[in-house]
Length: 394
Image (cartoon, rainbow, N blue to C red):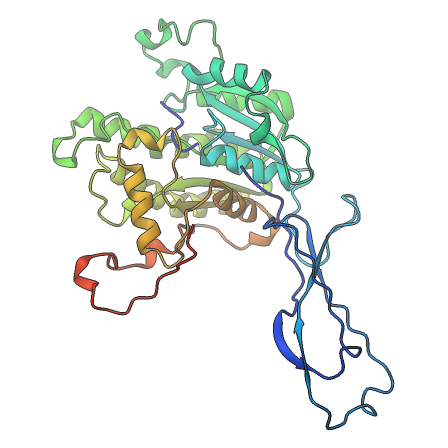
């Protein structure tokens, strides 16, 4: 089973600040400084510097008003040790297990990075056939550029576990898989075994992320999908989440959070997304609601899923038309920009944090709003309508 839905940033919520052009009486009365350092949202503080004097009212007169731009000043935090003002995502002391990280350009990696930037310890589970390449690339520094966190340090992965979430326990593994050379010499890689290894190594976890999907017949229309292909998609893409929770929830601390990744094909027709994958995503979302109830009542663990927009990852290219889907989203979504993996990672960090302590059983859309659209506004039938366009889209 391939980890097919496999960078991030620390999230700081700035204080409310003022940014507008206004008429200001006497430039000495109100002075605002402006300094911008790129487009990073990393560790921003927002401060408004206003100098007032006792003579403010005395100096009001009928002289012409002077235009001055009112801006804000953003500066880096003075110390990484100091708590951020206001709301912030702080996952220090938390441990996360992300199932489905096999490279550095998918959603699984981005989620790991965002969680790490917020202070969480990172453990990952990698599909067995991809394990050697992933660990070798990690060891040789091929992912170093992608590992850079907002503070300049590199994301550390405490441990990489072999994982094939299609199999729950050793008894479920067929003989032909056991004898497969790609699995030779690799032990403890079924879901149950990995959960036991994590418990042995670390005791407990706080965050569980399911970034797994595979449909062997994804390129086939549903009408042409075989029973085996359909069931394989369900097994790898949705039941694997049930299995992960079944075996990991007992070692999760109360107040923990689990997150999976879904896609709008679960509720809308996406031609070309076949092989039973749309059905698997629909099952995943339904299971999210039921598991939220069961895991919440029994273990005080939250269960949510992120419906992410199209990403040009290696895994998504297996579908065959990912570029077309990205172009379609760019033209039709309310926000005309290409979705980044980092944006999905940041949403996951929020869902894993205490800020989302009352959010469970939810499908969170991170797709530039495409899910809200009822029609494709780039259709020729709308050519005579005055539809707003973002000329600065990127």
